[in-house]
Image (cartoon, rainbow, N blue to C red):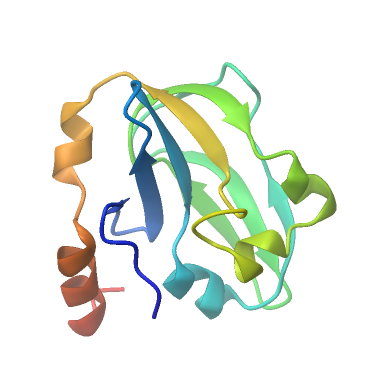
Amino acid sequence: MELPKDYRYSKDHEWVCDQGDGSALVGITHYAQDALGDIVFVELPALGAELQAEDDFGVVESVKTVSDLYAPLSGEVIAVNEDLEDAPELVNESPYEKGWIVRVKISDPSELESLMDAAGYQAFLNDGES
């Protein structure tokens, strides 16, 4: 399973890629998109929305189910992946690159450290904590 080493991961199967400028890209992991199956719709938050860590901020709908998205960290939504409106399958095809969901201006950088690194997330999956 693909798992970028320099990303951080939440127990809700979202990933965070620190952009090094006070912002981060957020998406769902390969594990999550695989479990959901073919994604047919992604509900994106509004630009400027304030996210609180662990609160829901959107929805992913697949052929199997509908699943809430939970913010892995707090901050302001400064970009959304508008490509997902016409091509939600990008989350399946490229979960760590083209399938990113939002870009967040991080309000509390210490929240990044509370997320799991790749090894920790792999151990979390191996332990069946998902």
